[in-house]
Image (cartoon, rainbow, N blue to C red; front, top):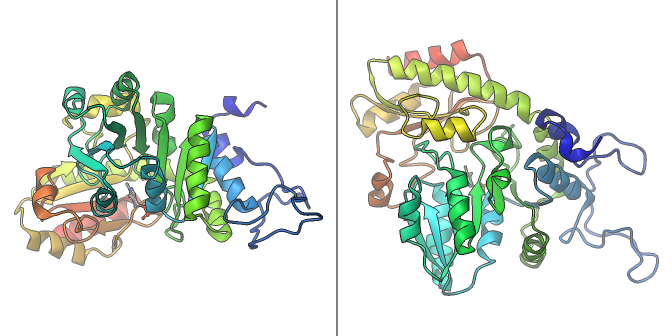
Length: 384
Ligand SMILES: *Cc1c(COP(=O)(O)O)cnc(C)c1O
């Protein structure tokens, strides 16, 4: 059957895959090798050196391209290595317009690494196309979108931003880590590049650090491949294997993440000791209509602020949780709780952070796939 016609659940398992040519292994073997024997100089079977390409990584890259409805996938040693490769497409003097409420590490690499090389970044709220328009000039080369945003759960209209990008001939990259291709496929909405921290939902088991890019355009794929090989931040064979194994259950896990996310968000919303809950599934969420149009469901990420709005209270709650583990990261089968101000977003100055709503009392939950009743009971005992 033609690959493009397969439904997501089938592509997650079979997309871009075929049994190994040597012995018919159904899972691609972990080709733990740096180099490949040649019969004569240049006489090889498609692989010369594992920075340039490795068969296990190729299997993962093909799967990534398939699930994101792209043509070319590239796997990196981390999500930040994937972001690093995208920004290396730019030149000194170029400008980037980015979401303001984004992953702290993305902010850090933009501000503290790439501004040094003469690239300027504007961090703005991207819910309004007119606001984005006002930051675009002839030096603008890239729009960087993260949606839903981290940790405020704002939803940005990818189609509207893509239209703007096309009009001005600017690249649009979407960090799809939170939503995953189960919920939304940005390339279908006009984005040029999809980026992932595959460390999160794609890997799904908190056992790897991996990054990914997916594109449709051949010239863009070639430029990114050149950077991947020249800079060398590639994903190793073992991590490629584990990520590929994770992707095969992505659709089943995401379905449960969404169900449990809803149960937790609705519980918190009704709680008398909770001030505010951020989850795009609420009808009262300012971007609910866009979320409904652009996403298949609302995901497993939920942020909230206790009624007291004090950091001390937020810290007390995350310390008391027992089923939720207090840890960085997200998207694994186990539920995690975090305090963005001191953990994931500590690298963003307090003033910048608070402008986008990341106050010291905010708690972020990555709702896992345990029993929803146990998760709610755990929150109950911690909030009191
Ligand atoms: C974790 C994360 C990253 C960075 O990825 P790493 O794999 O940790 O390098 C980028 N964007 C988002 C939204 C993330 O959650």
